[in-house]
Length: 452
Image 1 (tube, rainbow, N blue to C red):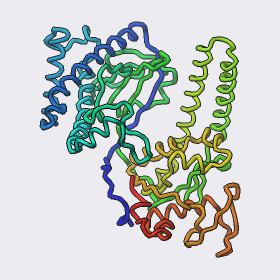
Image 2 (cartoon, rainbow, N blue to C red; image 1 turned 30 degrees about the horizontal axis):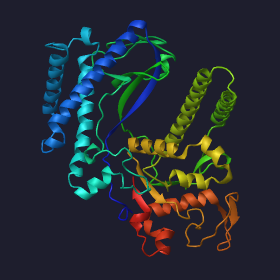
Image 3 (cartoon, helix red, strand yellow; image 1 turned 90 degrees about the vertical axis):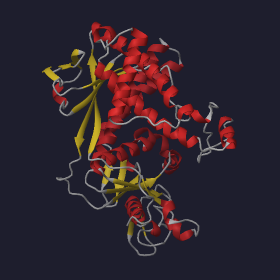
């Protein structure tokens, strides 16, 4: 089955992490503590990043960044140098820095991991010729989509680099086993280092077990959000898994996806109604803004707030679709469609359909769910998936408005979406069956089907 697929590079873990976001209210003292902690965190970031560039940057590319216990020694060294140079302290003090030592270590751990990824890109750049480096600097090189790779004319060694002067909004707190989140009442919890926080929703709606990391984030609208990162094992013992399934994207009659088992996955009517309500409100305020009625800042803020609510509503609907599609299967096969292809496939109603279902975002949510559940994802070239009659090489083109027709070859009634999803399944499992491979001699099986 897999001999024609591109070799998969993504490793599969036995656990998956996900984040729960809780809107919280802070006291004046907690807000001040958060602001000061962010300032210290930014100082620590800039100081540590400068050290990493000087010690492991392009002038010292032969040095390997420490791993394991040596990485912890590097973190402790960075903290020691930072405290001595910036604050003249011998040890970390939460009272002075407003930032816990655990948070600082976790923050530096992430910084070093990100710098390690940059060092890999840097080492690859050393293999470039002088001509390629010059073309990159002059922004001559383009990617496969025809876009320039370097519009800011950076040097070759700045590809993927980490920038200074980070204005972070997030403060991460590492949870210890002896200080878990405590639920004090329906809307009150207690977290390490910050103490009592007030939730906007009941604590019973959230699961505070298996918490690994807490992040307290100040959002752009000056509200605060508690982000809880949890890690759980992938348990598939109670799931009856089918071998594979193919899904076809569409938005006819609000059906987001149609699978090869002839099952439809529609967006819930209540979600559509609420999204339409938000959209009408947004358009109302946009008209008001265009006529310059009232304060423009207030109107713009209302539009942003309603747009965020609508986006959150639809994203949550995509997550529910992803759970329903991904969880019962082992292999998921879908069309390889870019944003332009998806707009073309929607016909005259593209604006309305794309307003309800963001195809690229929905695809990302589904694929992320599959990665967490250990499900293999295969993408198939979308060429004539709906035009080729399943099981044959017969091509019969119909307008998008025609959802069913009678096959002149077999006399069967053909459902457009079901036929397309069956072809996606067949061509994903057996790329040599793809109509593109059969019609064009230069097209190989590896070109039309690949594991993500």
